[in-house]
Image (cartoon, rainbow, N blue to C red; front, side):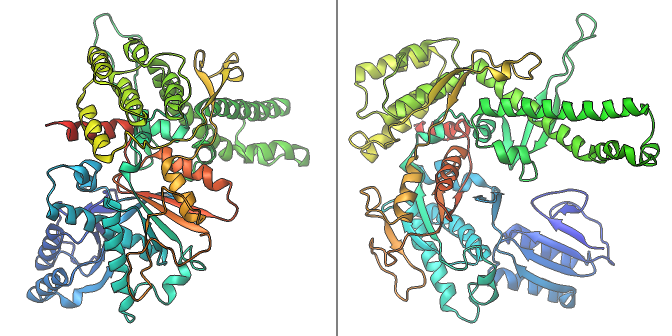
Length: 583
């Protein structure tokens, strides 16, 4: 029996490293920890206290020589050298949320947040620490992938600092042929073993509108309006006050958690679909389940077997094969019912937000702003409408307008907008930061382009409004998404397909396998890439991820992974902007 000691999770198999633990001298222990100062100190303490029979030390990131010597000294002092059975650097300092998406480990995620990187009072030492943290995780990612990438990045940004440091780290590892992590068996295991991948490092400041954008696809909506973290959504379900005596306190809300992972086939199929399609699909799945359930009941009724146990059914003669088949599919049917219930609850919670906050209206309006389409209602009217959205929704809308505008509104117009926002209950500090950012980035003369296509309203939903539908979708627009490449996707397309583009022509080029580094923007490789990794320094979101997924669907035989230093929704991002806007 092994005792697992880790610092990330605690369940029936694991104990937190810093918890109080009794000695179990006849049990080996497996440690899975970050090699931080306090974790190393605690491990040394465990050795001194002779807690376990033997120790298998697994470090999430590579441990430094000095810290390894600290453990060796502690083992010597405790006469426990032979008990330290194995020491591994696992190079797992990242979290894979999807087959094609990863984020940096989220312990102390404030350290690598957008706010941390863009603070006006940040010191050089603090910036170096942030960059080293990001580079360490990216290095772990490429060791696990078993491939050395070609690196491209924009100049004069945090992404360039990451590129320079990552290039140096990869180069140093490759130079040490004996201990290189990119030779021998490792390369064979990589997904990209036949052709080297492209790593595109972009700065969050390339596009600040998308993280604020109200969205319309299922996964991005769940992340935007619900408590969704590391693929788990937490819902509060009110148990109501029915059958309670007058004056009684309302019953406590039940909290339910659901895991939305690759095992969930419905989620895998529909996470990138527009929400009305999802609602319709849940209803169709429910009707299909009911039809299968009714068929089992009907067969039982014909055979006169209501209430009979499964044993009696299986003993029937050949002419009951149909019924036996139906019964044998019951486990599958029950799993289907569980997923239907799960997505009914999640989609109902999302729909409640859409209807109360008019998120469909916000989404359509923002799409028109970003694509420079004629607006059917003035921005002031949207902000002043007391029934449309929360103060945060209104602030998000105005910030998108301000970021996307060809030129900033006049002072008189801006004062009018600020007055309306204040009357709507908005906190104006995020605007202070966006004004500074736009002036600094000279975005007024060259705003980020979001394409010239928009959503097409297809009238109100019809099929999901059938009698008995789980979703009352009246008044919610059935908006059909039209594919348009967001700025990050456009950058990837230019670099992956080796297209000439003013946006990317000046991007720096690094090849860690070249003997000498160069400050070149001219790629040595002239062939289009088959595989690419996009990494956003400063934080990413599901809208960008889905946009890349949709883009690559039309590219036969090509693969793209999306990564970011942190994954935030609009509410979390606007809080960071607010902190940056405070004087």
